[in-house]
Image (cartoon, rainbow, N blue to C red):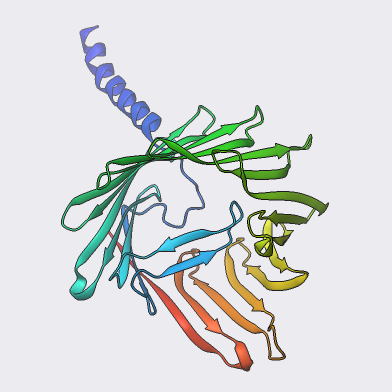
Amino acid sequence: MICKKMIHSPFLLLLFFCLLYECSKPEIDPNNPYLGVKTALIKTRQSTIIDGDTSWTFPDDRIYAMTRCPIGSLYWVDQYNKFGQKIKTQWFGKNDSLIDWETNKYDRNSRLIISKYYQSPHKLRRTIKYHYDENGLLLERSNFSKASKSQDREIYTYNSNGIITEFQDYWNGELKIKDTYAINPEGKQTQKIRCYPNGDTLFTVNYFYPTDDLIEESYYLPENDSLSFTLLKKFENGNIIERTIIRDDRIHNIDRYEYNQNNQLITQIRTVPSRQSGPPHKTLSEHHLDNNGKPISDLIIDLTDGKKTIRQKTEYIYTYY
């Protein structure tokens, strides 16, 4: 009897630790191109990074977004763990000097919960924390700046179907912006209103669905009606394939997108009609991927006047450990 206990005990102990390990493993995306390596370092260099350069884009969830490169940066390195999660980004300047870096921490559901931003040498600039509900919906994003000793908060509210109905943005404890959303019985957004704390409207977005593959977004800015515009989005197989901005009854620009068989974006062409009699301005963005879907390089090419002039090149260099 004693011998049987001695034989079974190591087996049960091993089984216990195996189950513990499986329970502690995060949920992962099987299609993540960085999955399966112990550590992946990706060095990214852009040929035309300008100090403090700001680029304006029009993503799906807001009028514009701002991306800023740290002043003096020449390239950056992203580090991924074996679960395909980006755990660190470092920005480097001249003579490979470290300028800034950030670290990310995730929960077992692969949700980002903490990001910390540092400035060389080892100076913590800000900490961002993310809080979710039991269904994985983001409830709050808090941003604490050590330099100004201030804390900003973003608070999200959803309906019973998990669709966002309200967004509040607090700057150092004071409400600055509030978004409210109207949802139709089919669960689609029909309106978004962004207001100041006093109730004045910053802008209103009305959503229309002429067909199953087309969304029309009408942006109205009461403080400056000349900036109001209409955004048309056309979809195919769940991917946006065309995006048109219309202002003052004129096309401001058209973006067209192409994808590979894995639904990864490979080309984007932006056409901006000339306001005079000249040809339209065209810009081609090419995304080159390897056989595993990992980015190799990005090119931004000016196609105006029928020429192909490379304006920016981004190269990705991989190192695995």
